[in-house]
Image (spheres, rainbow, N blue to C red):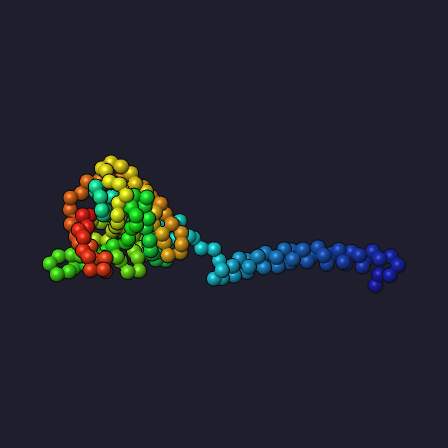
Amino acid sequence: MPSASSGRPATLARRGLRANTRPLRRLAVAAAAVVLLALAGCSSGGTTTADADSIAVSNQWIKAADAGMSAAFAEFTNRSDHEIRIVDATSPASARMEIHELVSAAGGTTMRPKAGGLVIPAHGSATLKPGADHLMFIDLKAPLRTGANTPVTVKYADGTSTTFTAQVRDFAGNQENYSPGDGSTPAHGG
């Protein structure tokens, strides 16, 4: 046994012990980091992507109109793992906008606000087109002339929004009636 006065063998033993525990400490720190990362990935408080960051807008256009109402059409592609819902739309071109659907009615079709908004499925798309779902411009502030570009902002259920520019085009089809729910049915024109 080493003498207490020399201290050399006891010091070496302590140094040897420390040298042998360094790899174990590094391993323990690495394991703790892996566990923390795994827990962070599983927690409900993890980061999420805003709905606006997951949507691509393409093939957007607006029906030319002199006054009253018009409609915007586009394709919305959802790159996320969850459905995304468009709940509102605005444009400086009109006093207000609504998300519309067409439904069969006596003697033809009628459009009305789409309850719950427009759903874009996870890893899917939703298409707004004449004779189907569309964004309705109500009370145009000025004529929408062919060739002009008009901004449209859509708002998602999570509160984020996307603004895109759509070109105004001539289109003579789809003369549906509008059922705003107050009994009046002005012509849609889009």
